[in-house]
Amino acid sequence: MLSPEQQQSLVVTVQITLPGSSVPNTVVAGYVGETLALSMPTLPSSRQVAQWIVDRALERPDPRLLINLVRKVDNQDPSMASLVRLADELDADPGLWRSTTPLGPIDWSDDGDPLNVKDGSPFVDRAEFRRLLPRHGRLDTPACTVILGDRGHGKSYLHEFCKQLAQYWGQGQPDLLRVGYSECPSSNLSHLDATMVADDLAAGLGTDFTKRPRQHEDPERNAQNFLHWIVDYTPARPLPALVMLDGFDSKGVADRVPDDVHMFIEGLVEAVQEDPEVAARMRVVLLGYDLGRLEAQKLRYQTSVLEWVDQQAVSDWFRKRYPGEPDYRYDDAAAFIIDRLPGQGPHRMRHLCSLVRGTTQQFEAP
Image (cartoon, rainbow, N blue to C red):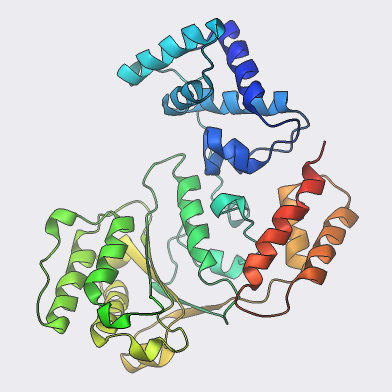
């Protein structure tokens, strides 16, 4: 689609905008998006990074990434004039686009899952949780999974991973996996109701908002109406959507969650386990919940315990992210992090992410 001269001009212009020889993934994400940026190998120069960015834009099945890239780096230099015209033409008629290569295959295995999530933060371990998620070739996963773990173990962090996974899989088939999420507020629970939770979920699930019911004055009837809306009007996709509910068991909060909210949540669990058509469209992931409530309703679930992230898990993350290094480099980096990581507390995973991100610099340095 681009002549060799145009490609060369674009690479040079992109390189000029990059910050030196060591370009972090967070900067690259500004050009190609977070998902593609996570797949960038360690490159020794800004020139190679610029070439990698342009190659990714030219490989895409549609011209949006190239259009955005050209407009982002346009410096009004005459060498960019033909590229700007091309971007305008493609914007007006995307049918003119021809990618240089077909999109690469998606790795559906657990080992192919993204190693980073929000803002380039590392996603370390969690193999048991990832095995419980539906994916291409593995749809016999639990209808309801309850994640167990103390504060600081990273339950809420799983939501960010699932969003990143949906973006990664969406490279090959957009909208393949949807993730609906609702988090229990830590205060003002008197204003919480099933409507708020349902609206949160619907936005992520792609539920048909034209079918949204009106608020009913009776809380139980209202919960039932919004439950049926989510269950009946969330569209079917090749992979079941993930319904993620976070913090409804938090200490000092769980006993103040209104009954209609519990009715809505437990109704979702019942629907996915009793109706095969609903189970084909969605799965429920409870990031903490009162197991006694589920058992009292005779609702089935599978638990997944978030174990403490240890030194071996951190070492394995570096080994996958930066292959080909001597083993001692991975082990030394992991030991450095674990030695400085708080042993407990609600912010342990936040500290872990910061330490891992900082330590990656020694692997990315030229």
